[in-house]
Length: 122
Image 1: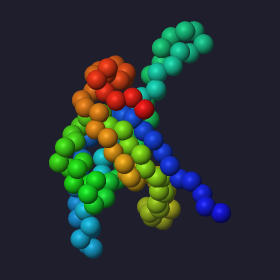
Image 2: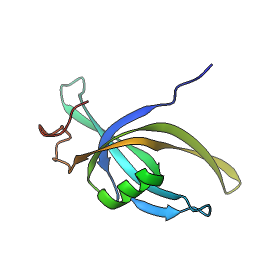
Image 3: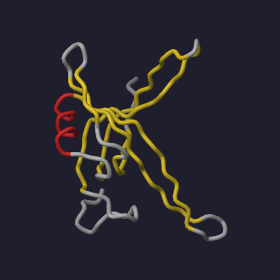
Image 4: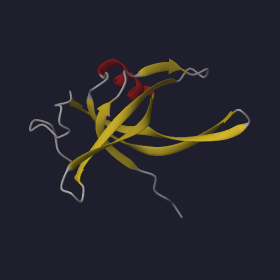
């Protein structure tokens, strides 16, 4: 039976994208993305929670990210989760990243985490 591995994020780039070419000649661009959530606690105070995601774009999407995006830019990303492992000090460490399958540029940040009126809504 087929499964589903899909994630949708709207947030801001936390760093400028970094691009490299693999030994096989494939282009990959990586960056970190912050996704903010604002909620009220039991006392009625607004709390902002920021989650950080490792993002990876390949081939044509890698070129688009490299050419047009920079730290602070707002984007919609749709992709799949991928977990990888590496060895450090004799211990296996795991990390999860989002591999981009679709990307929509939403513009520069407006400072409060809300969507600007001229930005598309989903």
